[in-house]
Length: 100
Image 1: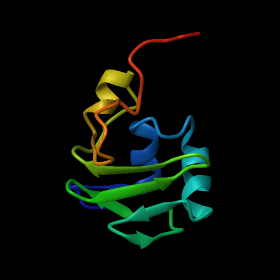
Image 2: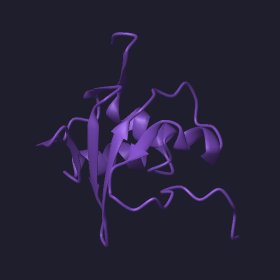
Image 3: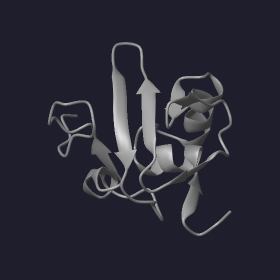
Image 4: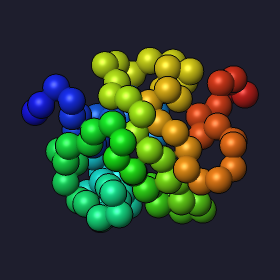
């Protein structure tokens, strides 16, 4: 894969939209992800900076723009730098505190 692209499942995992890469791949394979408005079920689909990812969850739909490609699954503050929220509200998708 080109250096300016990354697998969709890997990006979802790095950005902390899934707890594991396997769950990220299942999310894609189940048809809950759209890339630039097109439904995809291919976890190996390449994403690049500027792409729009739509994630359909049970109670909400998240729309984010890819701002960076991760190199590792780091802390939430690092994950938040990988995307820009396009939902209209300014709430963070990943919380920065643990309510454990």
